Length: 249
Ligand SMILES: Nc1ncnc2c1ncn2[C@@H]1O[C@H](COP(=O)(O)OP(=O)(O)OP(=O)(O)O)[C@@H](O)[C@H]1O
Image (cartoon, rainbow, N blue to C red; front, side, top):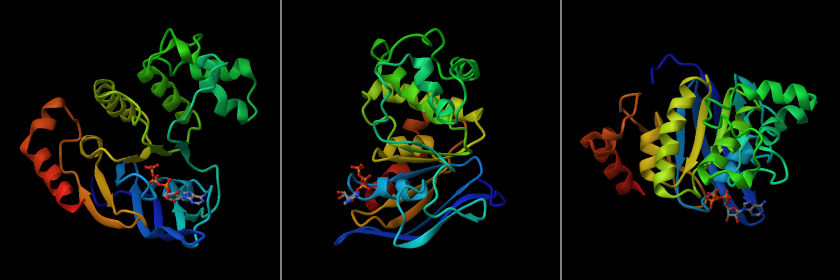
């Protein structure tokens, strides 16, 4: 990533306590335009709480969330957010699940369907518009959930372990697919994972988080070619980064 890129999002010194439990401890991070940044850390460390704060769903005890130089601390509606296990509504067809963000905004069903239709191809779901969630594979359901997240059409997208529940092979396919799709999206992505290889493979930068309370242990620039191919996974550069991360965690 080049140094002159603009910051989309700045998280400045946020802390959060739930009663006696300090969950987030003075976390600062930034996300630049069109950047892919991962938060890598152990389960239960407070990563989701950091996302909830960025999305404005939770107010931090200290610190600020700045988006495009404006203070968005405690304000919702500025980012697209895919929760962990973001479920599709089983009684709605895929097209209506995906169109939900538009319906929420007050767009009529017919028009909402029209608007989302053209995205089915890039999300690899062409032909499945009128199916129900149970008729799709696990990977397809995840893509539909990602597509719904995309329909909130914000330029900052928070993804909380979107591939956590998938088998290793489907997960790898989804990672390649995600890299392809984001080339056309023009969005900055913040991605939570506890999978080291996934973080290296997808990211421009990685923040390594500590155990609870979450604090930032180190920031790592992933200096790998922007276009990621499978050979990268067995390259010495990839392994050096992996070894380094393992030594910190
Ligand atoms: N609303 C809340 N009230 C009380 N405790 C909470 C609340 N939300 C989260 N916690 C606690 O804060 C800690 C961090 O939770 P969080 O979900 O942020 O972690 P995480 O890193 O996302 O974990 P995982 O990867 O397992 O989802 C947990 O111990 C959790 O029990």
